[in-house]
Length: 422
Figure 1 (cartoon, one colour):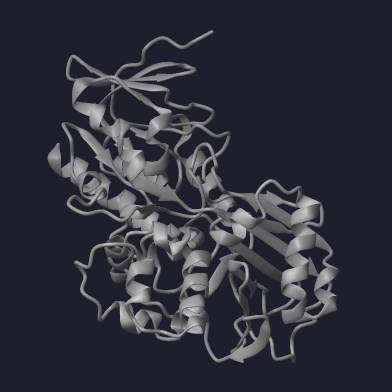
Figure 2 (cartoon, rainbow, N blue to C red):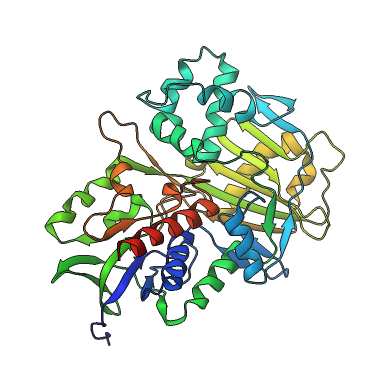
């Protein structure tokens, strides 16, 4: 049984990640009637929390924030959740060229940030093209390649240099962006924000087609047709093709996903009886160049009770693990990280694995990137309004692009534009 066509809302929002949630809350606060539509069974997008049988909450996707991320900081407090510190003991262990080394900082802090901000912001081509122009030795190239792949989730030859630099330039600070986590999980926060919207939020409601008739947007969903005066697309550019855009003026959207690549990412969180690595030369991070894009981070609560390591497998590392079972993936990852942390790493109490690569509703993890482009920035049209159609998302955040904070910023910004337009 389908629902009849609804009375038009002021704004329909496609996608209940933090950008969509933020836009919905801001629009509602401004007096607009909104409807937030989510294809999955719960809100959060690339953020998801599982309540494990061991009594702990595990973030399967986006997790960290810092005091400079004022919106997420405030949201955690507003909804009565618990902010916890993330332990960060100085020092990085790295496997480079098959040899174990101890570094003072992570791969990308070894000159990458300094050099990229000195580069020509209009330089064409890929991130790899730029890296190869720096005259680095093989180890220097390998460090940047691996660090970028872990953060961005793609081989750097597939990423637009200009778009990556633009993203980085929107950060207010790179200092300790992994300062805090939420004890109850960021997915729990997303769920509370969705619940607060009441009947203005609808889960299990994928939008399969969008048309324009009579000055309104007509959205086809399993529950019936939704009509809206304004439409906000708050999902990844990589999944635009999930929707049949019927109106002539929206046909350009069908080819747009071909200009983007979503991150390939596997996240593994492992809890231990105690932080056996404390007191060793492993500080807070372990990285390797083989496979490129893998890191293991101490994500523990320094107050105790939650001693965890988080393994991020991005880009080449994620592709190397593709098609394996969870047991096979864990065994392969253990072979990679044991030389950094020792044999005790093989004995976690709890393991939570999540594959974000090619996710049907978010594209991949944890962000979507523009491919190298020549004449037209593929993100530029997404920053404009198109006859009542607006775009938002972590990728378009005016600050902390790609983070939860960036998504919240982007949602607020688009809501302000819509309210100002009337």
